Length: 174
Image (cartoon, rainbow, N blue to C red; front, side, top):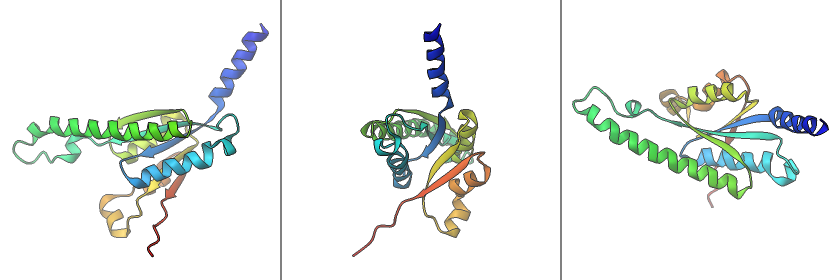
């Protein structure tokens, strides 16, 4: 009976770990944020024998129709090709994220979810009951942010958890 209780206590400890979601895309900014997070929250010097978090990496794959305007003739014929390219891109991004995590000896759950990154990340926070969301900052100016929208800004206002925006330092030119 004591063994069952011990096993249950170990399982409960795993369930009680704080969940951290990291949003990734194909940008250097996003992978800098992932590497920064691994270094500051998952390195053996910080974590000791066990990491304090359960890591979930989420990539939002755009929908083919968000890439191709359906207004033009023949656009529907292009959608399968666009979708195939988006799937290949997502696979490359996920593989790169896994390689970064393996290099740091961090186990993770990696998900690819189709949709707008802002909504996908906020939904991932809810799904995984995350306590923290980490996103990179592209460093856009006010005009680009207004035109393109800022994923980090949206998440900071709509995610139901702490949002950490990691900025990649500007390279110093000599």
